[in-house]
Image (cartoon, rainbow over all chains, first blue to last red; front, top):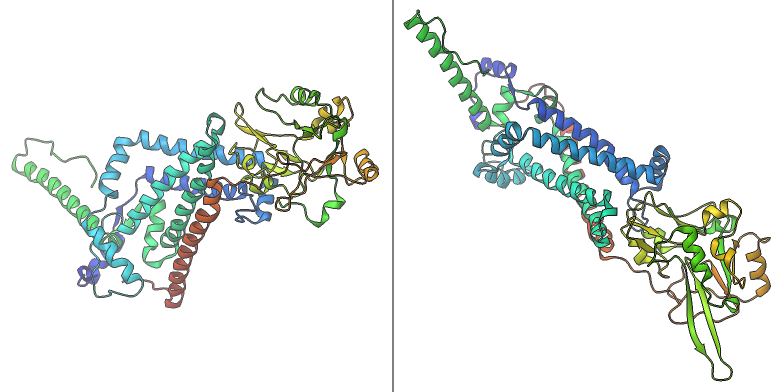
Length: 272
Length: 251
């Protein structure tokens, strides 16, 4: 990372201690709610799949879950009731926070730009040990890999949700073909998300360079050092915002000195 | 959820013994079944098949063959059921549907070689003969058996040598099942006194819906491959991380 090469030690220390807000409370809560729902829906959903023709789930797990919940019917009921809760809360969050969170998040954090495309070309090569000399373009709040996973999760969640609704409300659906196709799509969408989830959990909780990402999912904050090294575009935007805020504060002070009669300095209340 | 293997002889195996010579096609069994099980009009759990006139005048005969779910030993419908809503009951050996768990996908309807199942459009679940389990638990015979004028139908535990069905079957010496060389799921209706192995009655090969084939042949391998790839990638990175050791400061 050449843009970090000549940062003096004292500055590095300061950056490590300075924290920047990355996730708001709504995101943190939604994330952990999602985790809890996946932790309950995945094992029960797997246990439902008992067809030996699929040969997927060990019989012991099917029996354990059926005994735990009191039979196939109750296991199925638990699974779809929780699934409905999951969908309801996600939908509620999106609708309630549509203007405050959803639109800004989608616009500022989710779209791929030219740097992201370049990143996607270079990063996979570097991961298998090639193109070491090529520089990774600076990334925004989320890097291009994270954005791609986000798309997979969104597509997967919509697929899981739509087919899950079909399966839950099967009695109102007069086309058995639709119910039949909902099954492999439900399964495939879960598989798609879980394949990514393995990497997501590893990168978020175990991979040393992303250590801060894990704690940020509780505190919402990452160090300026981490932000600058991994999400340079976002870091510099934040730094600029902060500088502008400081400038406005100073401007208020200057005006106070120039005309002391106006007791109220025009300092904006918003936090930096 | 496995089909019953070698140990099935030691368990109860309820089934029917049907004497086709005694059936007069009155269809009282259909009415009794519908009344007992609240089967909606337009559907039925049991049938009486007519093999038509046979022989030449004056040696004419006509055979009626009552059928319903064969409660097979290795039922294709159970094997294909996604959730285990259809299962072979270990207490009775009957093939049953837990309609609270059934999602009405109809994969089992396609799979059954005897077409003994139907989708109930009102409730969105699959329905079929359950040997009148509620009556069985009260010690009564199924409605179709209890109502049969000619005594064509018998029902009981084929594995119990003292049962009517086992005794009748033993005495008859010769009985037929509806099986072919290709399709033999081990049906538990045994027919006496008539040749029932005829076109229109013999089982077809189990049919599998295209969604089920797609699931089994495409979706499962694709998901397993994606999971394996993802897991191996993660495992390789983790191994490298362990070999490198921990750094206190990230430079």
